Length: 276
Ligand SMILES: C[S@@+](CC[C@H](N)C(=O)[O-])C[C@H]1O[C@@H](n2cnc3c(N)ncnc32)[C@H](O)[C@@H]1O
Image 1: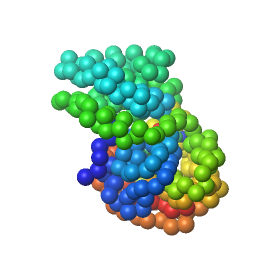
Image 2: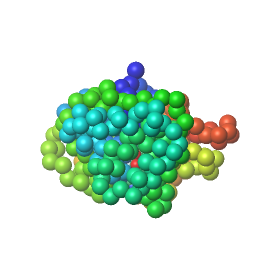
Image 3: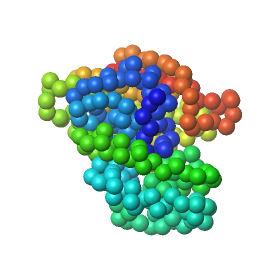
Image 4: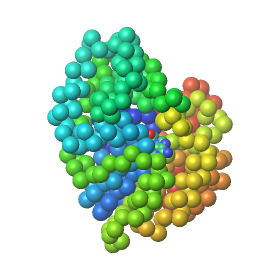
């Protein structure tokens, strides 16, 4: 069984971890995740160092807080997991407050509440960067105390970045230590194929358009000589080959979905792992 991340995360790789770990080396010197999300891959491997990036600043601030002082985060967030806080009025009130907050640390604390009480754990922001996931109607949202501790221990030797992937990959390629075993794993938002219009793929206010996938492919192709292994996850589909032109090998596998489409016809395509 894969280790659970403390963030309940849309698109988490938790459910396909055993299949992924046939390709992502379980051990090495440095694991670099360009689109960390819940950090599920990092949590299920044993590298000497981790470098984790996600452009979601609220998320990365929360990771930094947990990394520095998990007890303090538990103390501050636990009181938000009570029966009195699990109703639409409280949720939407706190969601509105979150959208007005400018202090990143305050936002990070509230994010943990929103992700566990909001619909399906979605971290969805509109084009004005307003968090807009609806209330999730869960009976008793789980407080991930054990998982917060695990994250802090496992990722003790991690550094966290909140950059756009283009800046981050260039930064990662400049790391000293050429003899280190470095694995780069990229799990961008899914490529949108026409039949998948109901599938959640947007995580940020900026979205992730087709040209960003093309840019990512070019960058990984250009920088791959700096690393031992470069891998990328996505959905299979007609756009895949023409988008990820740098792919040296494509592995396909079927996986259970955490973000489900409404109808059978719109069921997402199988997962692929691309080797660069
Ligand atoms: C599919 S999810 C990653 C899921 C992760 N592998 C897991 O197991 O939880 C994609 C992530 O990319 C992040 N993201 C979106 N646009 C980005 C960008 N331009 N640069 C870096 N990260 C981005 C999102 O915030 C989201 O967390």
